[in-house]
Image 1 (tube, rainbow, N blue to C red):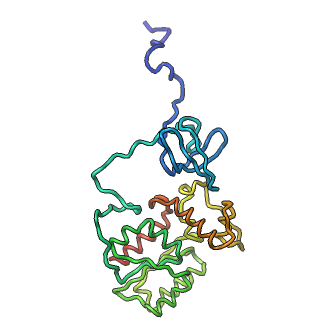
Image 2 (cartoon, helix red, strand yellow):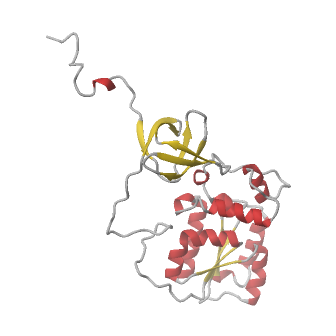
Length: 278
């Protein structure tokens, strides 16, 4: 006979029958979480066995107890302490995703080099690809603008033994940068150079919105200096160059691996490394 009253109500799990189970999510660093109670949204910057610290896109930090009351991609979740990292004897990876070479000494610098437009570009490349570049003996130099590339080519022209790989900001059809690059590649030094670029106005924008804890980078109106406009949108100080430098350090601090960068930048840097080391 069928039991009209169903299974034993005291059986294990009877309290959860018909109840939607809440997913348990480890409170890992840089995970972007929303607080259900008041909508505060930020990236995890610190977590313990009992609480978690969130930092929003304006730089405000707040502490919350671990447990229920959080949203991840709109779904209710329970934050739990992150699992302790297991000690492994296998190969570790660099920030670029390459296998790290244990106890490796930096190679003597090659004649070939990678040129980037500015200091911020150089610092970002160093943070993600620095370990690989030291192994390969590749030096990164900055031009202070692609406009200065022609002068460098005249004073220190590239050769078959000294190749130049160049990374250009905002390399899109019709831009000033594209016209400069096309002219240089048609010139006498073009065969010993590889010039690639990303579509972003500035390398700041190559850091993913997820890494920044925002939905998207702000759109800055024409006529407004872009970096100052970004700082203003984030409500960061932007009165002088020191403010801009501090803003960049805040952005750079959100980058720990290549996964924090847009593929449009990652692929171009990898191309240049291959070109100057082949």
